[in-house]
Image 1 (spheres, protein in one colour):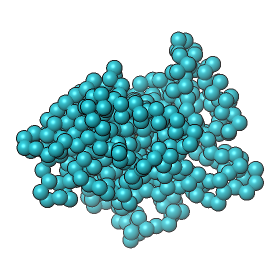
Image 2 (cartoon, helix red, strand yellow):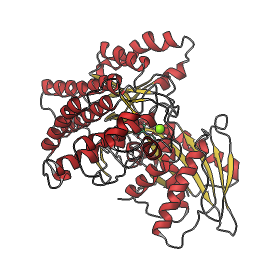
Image 3 (spheres, protein in one colour):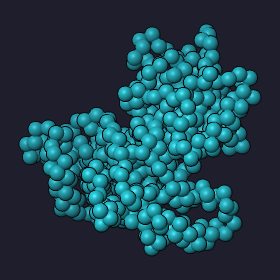
Image 4 (cartoon, helix red, strand yellow):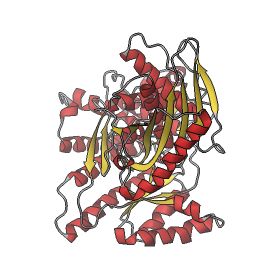
Length: 518
Ligand code: NG1
Ligand code: MG
């Protein structure tokens, strides 16, 4: 399955949005001309995403259900003639005020340095470049380094807001580099795999949901993403319904700073769930878990499959039926409840004793790439969230994939059931995974009180965005409530523009593509 080539914006955006995107694309091309004195060879694009359900479980290798949004990252690219010596990459951005132009050389080795301690927009280009280079080396034996390129980027996915501007940027960059180096047919799965690994070099041990959601989707569908036995994605068309599914995204305008150390830290959660997998596998006397594609090489999913294969004699746990799989997860929730009883968390000492691994070895293996300061690790709560959330994704997908409702009552029931699952996720994020914040809780509360079926944070949390399933005829009421009770209270000087940016009704958008210019 290759990344599609578009020849008109109609193939990318919904009809009512073509006009504003045409203006954007024109601005991008003029900026390119004024910056480099020529037309680009092509434009690559990849969208942001909103995660409908399945939070913080992608890096545990459990299925997730995001959808692409319309907002995206565009890169207009002109390819340099191949010459001896270093290749030069020139990067400019339509939003010069925020993102200053940069230029760097790719040395003869072909490898660029990325300093994850600086939060620099061009790092995300470099990470896409790095990933694409590695892939090109694998597929073309004589490939050494990328050609030079002139690039102008434009993104309208809000950054730091849980809509995955970073993955949109990394995917677009990797796509640009592959295209610039003569790969005409870029395989979607390869692109996603490259972008997942690349993004980890920028400072977060992330899972693969965002990159999959940026590349694979078809317009009008949510995406059911699986990570085992290998990465795969299934487009789930929204059912035809009298009262359709309407997802509203609301920003909290609390900047989510995932990079900070301390308890509000993405990387700490990744360490906690990895250690939970190791501790559980020791408790159940499993043989060593095979390494997997999760950020630290061991995941709850791998523990899960090993448990049922080694203890219960299941031959191939990927092949069990959906209901069996759900029952297993339910069983694991009970196991955690029983075998990981400590509410206050586990110390390094305790974990090292259970795992039979010295503290320095444990730190070297799991806490070195991104140092962790925490003293207690809440294995119980984190594992309970992960297994519970994996069940909710299964249930949500089952509801979406069942035959469309035939009566108003069925329609209403379906929306309510979907909403309840979203509400349960929010509760679990707030209480077990502790990745919500008072502002996100408040946005959810307000939406529900104005008629939303379900409300939850989306993305990493600790700020950023929330997503709400809202009856079509209540969207205005919900919006009004937020404006009165949240936005204008918290930000008395908020502008009309900012408010428009804050609340967006989102239809599922289409994934990455390349547009040939001229
Ligand atoms: P955000 O913060 O929304 O980009 C992050 C991770 C995802 C996933 C979610 C939580 C990155 C690039 N992405 O998303 O992989 O783990 O948090 O579900 O960090
Ligand atoms: Mg991100």
